[in-house]
Length: 369
Length: 222
Image 1 (cartoon, each protein chain N blue to C red):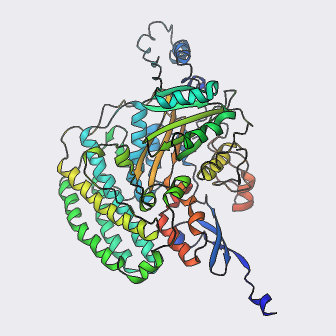
Image 2 (image 1 turned 180 degrees about the horizontal axis):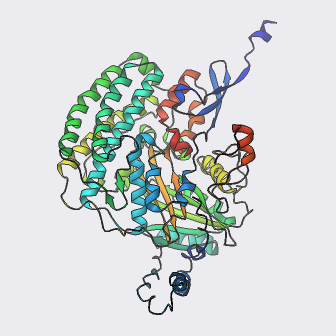
C-alpha cells in the first residue's frame, strides 16, 4: 500500500518562458523524477525576428546595425564579425589604426559581456551583491562606448572597411584608466565568490561537459576552454591584428560550471592585457580603407568567424554581385551551445539546472535571431 | 518596403564556382543592355564595365582534396579556394559518407554549421552547406551539396550531435527535410506555422495570417 503512494512518478514541468533565471524568453520543458531532471527540451524562437531574411532585403551597409541586435550585450563583437565577413567578400582589409581601435572596443565589450554574465549568474545562485558591482564597472565600459559612438548597447561602432568615427579626445586615457580600475575590482569579485562555500558547492562538479561532448555538440568559447581545450579563434586563426598581442588562453580541467566561471574571470583579465597593448601601440593613420560608396561585392561566398564572448560567431554570406546579400547566415554561438543543455542537465537537480543555464551564457536575442 | 526582385538575375551566381567562364561570358551581353537600356547603343559604354569577368577562383590543392578525390571519385568535385577558403561540392547520395570520412580519417571533428541557400531558378533549387573544422589541422572547409526541391539529404546527426538543431533550423527556414533526423520539427517558427520564411518566394512581408489571427488575436501582423 505504502509503495503505491511513495512510488516516484515522473512529472513534466514547464520552466519559462517567463522565468527570471532563463535570461530572457527560453522555455525548457523539464521531465522530473522528484527533484532530479530526467530530460530537458528547449523551446526557442520567442524572439525570432527573421534577421537573416531582413539581411537579404537590405544593402550590405543597411544590414550592419541589425546584427547588433542579436547578441545585444556584445553588440561590438557582432558588428566586428559582420564587417570582417563583408570585407573578406570585397577583398579589403581595415587600416591598422581601425583594426587596433576595433580590438580595443571588442575586448572592452568582452569584459562588459562577461560582467553581465557574472552578475546575473551570481544572482541566480543567490548572491545578490556581485550584480551591483558588475554593473558598476560595466557602466564605465558603456560610457566609453557612448562617448565614442553615441550608443551604449547597440553600438554599430564599426563600418565596412574601418570606422566611422575617429577616437575622441582622451579615449586612450579612459581605456587605460578603466584597465587600472578593473583589475582590482575583478579580484574583489573573486574574493566574494571564488572561495565562497555556497558558490563552490553550487558550481563545482555540476553541468560537466567534457572535450568530446563539446566537440560533438559544437560547443565553443569559454565552455570549450573550461573543458580543457586550449582553443580560441583569436589565436587559432587571428583576425583584426590579434596576432600582435600577447595574451593567454585560460583553460579549465573539469568542464563544470565552476571552471567556466574561472575561465571567464581570467578572460576578462586577459582582455585588459590586450586593451593595454592595443592602446600602447595604437598606430596613427586613416581609419577607413578604400571602400566603394556603394558596396557591391563580386559573386562569391565566404564564411568568416570570430571569437565572440560566447564562442564562435560566424557569418556565411553569399553575394550575387548586387548591393544586397543573396544570403546571410549567422552561426550563433548561443544557439549551438544551448543545444548541449540536454546533455549537461541530465541527472542534475532542478536548482542546478538554473546554474547550468547560467554558465551556458546564452542571450536569447542571438539564439532566436 | 518589399524588395522582392532579388531572385532575378542571380542565375549566374550559383554555377559560378564550377564553370567560372560561363557567367563571365554571359555577363557582358546581359549586363550591358540592362545598364544602358533607356539610352542608345551599348558598344561605347561597356568598355569600362568589363572588370566584371572575375578570375576563376584558384583550385584547392593539397593532400585532403586528393584523398577525397581518390576515395569518392566523381562524387566530389569543384575543389576551389575562393578568398583562401577551401570548399568543394559533393553529390547528395555521397554526402553522409564524405562527412563521416572527413571526421574519422581526416580529423574534422567539429561541425561548425549546417545551412541552406535557395536558388529558385535552378533545377537543383537548394544548396546545403556544411562548415567543418578540424582542431588538429586548424583548418576550416566547406562542403556543399545541391538538391532538388523535395529531395531529402541524409541527416548527419549520427556523426555530429550538433547537426540536430542546425538541421532543424534548415528545415524550418527552407523546408528541406533530412532523412533519418531523429526529431525533425520546427525550431524557431511556431509548430503550426505554414511556409518556410527563408525561401526566396516567401516575401519579407508574408506571414501565416491564419496563425497570427488565431494565436495573437489581431487581424494582421503588418
